[in-house]
Length: 160
Image (cartoon, rainbow, N blue to C red; front, side):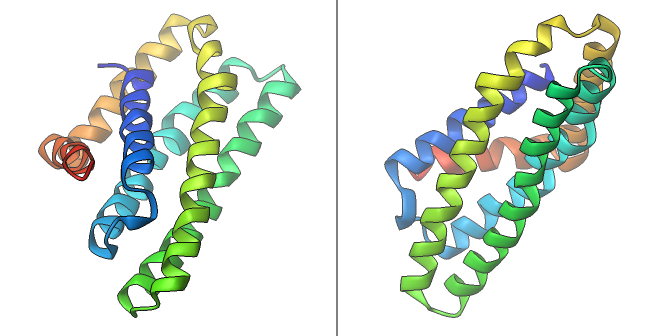
């Protein structure tokens, strides 16, 4: 298991969930999904992936700018997702669906940017940096709980 493989698996599950359920996901399932995004997926990117890119490309201002721009999406998604949860829990179904639609759009766009602009650069990074990132990503999944990780990926699949 490597860091890009973990993130790509998440991206596939996210796209399928969006395509098959989209704004019809119930508030409880969305909360589980959002907490997974914040507490594992974005954490892998913020704590491991993006720092690895910054280290490997420290002299390339364009790539550093790209990494920083993509990284900033996480705070927006966290805030928006927390609002979606609030609207879902309070029964404000119209606001829930509108904000959820926006959340999913931003999340899919964010993931697509990573896949097209960052992931192809990964193979050019020094092997030592890549191996360390892979090790740390697997450790983070294990700390999160591999069973919990697979349960959430399966939950996304079962909702499809």
